Image 1 (spheres, rainbow, N blue to C red):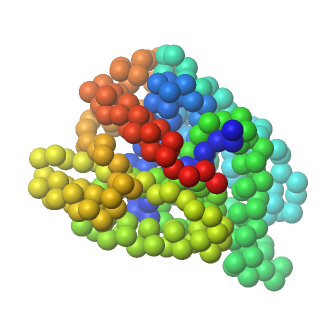
Image 2 (image 1 turned 180 degrees about the vertical axis):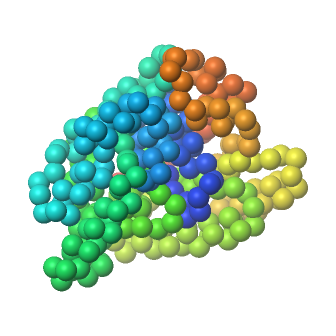
Amino acid sequence: MPARLVSVINMKGGVGKSTTSVSLAETLGLHHRRKVLVIDLDPQTNASIMIAGPDKWNELREAERTLDFYFEAYALQQKPKPFKGLIEHKVTDLKSAPDVSLCAAAPEFRMVERDLIESFVKRGFHIDAIQKWICERFAQGLKSVVNEMDYILIDCPPGISLFAEAAIIAADVILVPTIPDYVSRLGLISFRKRALRLINERRGAPSSLFVVATKYDETMNLHRSEAGLLKDNLGEAMLDVRIPQHVDIAKAAEWSEFPRTFEQKYGEMAPIVRKLGEEFVARMEKAPAR
């Protein structure tokens, strides 16, 4: 069965998007024995460095095995290296080495979209045609690996870019990490409308949307009330698990040169991250496949 594609996205930055992508990938790989690929579409490269460490990330970058080189070749009207060759397997610092792979990003990726747009505009393409072209190239790359994985988690950049839109259009499920506050809730409602409209217009096939509260503080009345409002507004789309604002989550994001157990890595948050994986798998079993 082809992998289920999950785009992890939020228009706002600083909501724990990359941390959610990596922790979900690790618990799916370890506790559910799933083959998971994390694709880092964010030029900030947080997910890449979290999951593979700075040394391995530098190796991939120097070997031109990052997404910017793949798409830059298209911008230069050259034939890119195979997308499959970008994938680095068994990348986490967990002692038990779960089957988690990475397709890394680099800071230069932020320039690639601009260069692509400039190149195509000079050749007379309109923005819709450029978007369609990016979607097709992205889908072509995914097609080469989709039958080798159980889940592909796409860590998207903040905001809406052409690459983020391509990830949304490709996804079976959109996972939105969000801080439970008033501004985030308003932004989420707006994003949900745009994302679902985009999927209907460009793909014409259903996609599920899940939302998970991150950086949650149970002691704050605002967080409790906003989390309740999100549940009221979103219903089953809102996951029951809430990821706390906790130092152990921050520590887990730091790469360790020495392999560690899941419990060592996530500390007091290990049961929460495991619960995230369990609820995610249960929801995915009910979500319609493309």
